[in-house]
Structure formats: C-alpha cells, structure tokens
Length: 105
Image (cartoon, rainbow, N blue to C red; front, side, top):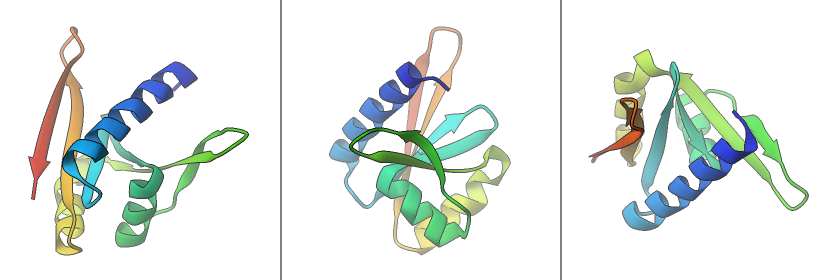
C-alpha cells in the first residue's frame, strides 16, 4: 500500500472515529485481511493477542497496524464486543469504489 492510499485510509479513520466514538473499533477490509490503525491497533492487538506492525514512519509519529484474516472476522468481532467495544467495518465493493459501512454494537 502506498502513501496516498494510507493517507486516504487515515482520513477515513479520523472521520469515522469522530462520528462513531472512541469506543468503536474501525475495521478496514483490505484484501484478505481486516486492518486497524493507531489506537485501535493497540486495542485489537491487546484483546486478540496478535502483534502490531509499523505501517509508516513519519518524522513526528509512527502509524501502527494490526491485521487479522478476513475469515476470522466474526470470531474476532465477538471477542472485541465481549471486551466492551463496538465495531465498524469498512469495505470497498464493486468497481466504482463504493464504501459499505456496517456498525455492530
């Protein structure tokens, strides 16, 4: 993923966090994985016991990502809900780039 795509995802992430709140984990469907970023990355890594990775290093900050396979979405979403978090999944469907958002509490 290049910087332009990462900047776009970070903009979407910031808007979604503002709209749905800090207790909502934003899950982005990217290829065969769901990814979480920034603070959500830390929470998901802790709750699910999976490692965080560095996505980008900037002079002022580092962006972390936590990934899990899309086939594990329901199981991992249930674990996040059991830990007290809501989830929002963001997927791009179709050739027109339409975004599908799904909020589950």
